[in-house]
Image 1 (cartoon, rainbow, N blue to C red):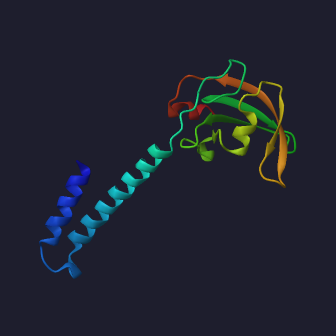
Image 2 (image 1 turned 45 degrees about the horizontal axis):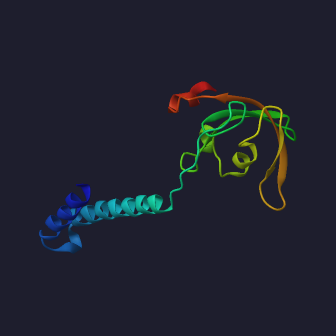
Image 3 (image 1 turned 135 degrees about the horizontal axis):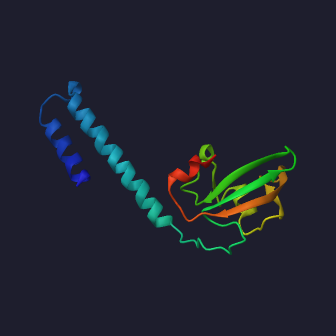
Length: 145
């Protein structure tokens, strides 16, 4: 529906005459291109999508679990929620399972000391302190800090 309306808006604006000073034409064209770009993005996502299991043992870090970790080098604790790569947002402590820290802690238990391999030259250890199996998938859970 949006695609059809965007194409129609471009046609109507083009029919108004001189395109060199036709703001409506450029605005309609911009909206149409933004919509087409979004369609291409979604098509690529669907084409490359992989189904992953969100199940994990109750005592293991898995998708949608809040995991509190202790950074040995910094003597600091942080709490992260393990999420898929699309939902990852470091500003909200949502860590992708495909990120170095997500890969390191997924599947591990409280008390485990794991190596986070950032690249060939950089790595560090952390200890899993707490795992919360939170079934609430809403954004409100982020406000818990």
